Image (cartoon, rainbow, N blue to C red; front, top):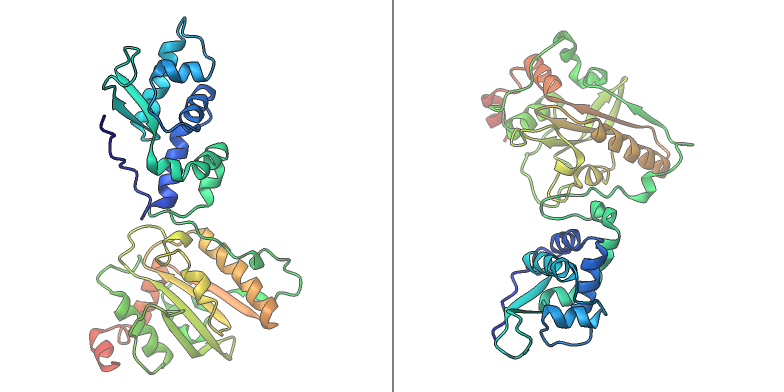
Length: 313
């Protein structure tokens, strides 16, 4: 009697595996009854008739077919194992059913998520990144001093006011060239080399807003992302905006080559509230979308030229 090798992968996809199994287990009463019967004390494989007997279900009417349908469902989605009857169970059954070794180890988690499917929405997987906004941003705005700014409000980018409208910046402008262009406009020395532990893509204490010199932190999301920018698409773990606010700055800006979803602005606002309350300072926040990025490039063509970029290395 050979048992089928489990194909459930838990080592690298634990959360996703639990969610998938829970979805297929569901809340169907008969399915749950059969599942619980199989995952009882015995480790021996049992036939459909034996399983029905263990649940005190009479083998009459359409009961047998309903149970078979659920056994097929559980087996198909790898919640249980199915093997051929080699004669060890003498009731004429063709197949026997038993625990899946991998599912047995995570049974509790699978059942809990099946009972509460909404919980899956709060869990990050490889295919779905969940941005966990820290609880401290869900605070009252009392005492918080925040202000939303646009690119036109930043004195350092004053020439942009001459460019009223523009298309989105083209993908031919790389993130590195754009970053070097910002440095050239601001007059920020140094290099633009990235590293994994950075809090921001560009930090400067030379930004001027409302006639005041302030510290600013920029998060840039380059042309590689061909979709609307959302919090979950910012950083490998969807936490790029949160890391941005670890900088000791007065102005926080998110830039993207295309459209920026309002949820990004909302997250910026919440984090600005928390930053203001913790520092006692006025915190400014804003975005530079694809159109404003192109307005900036058109307003400062020399700074965004390849020649300037090379000279600033």
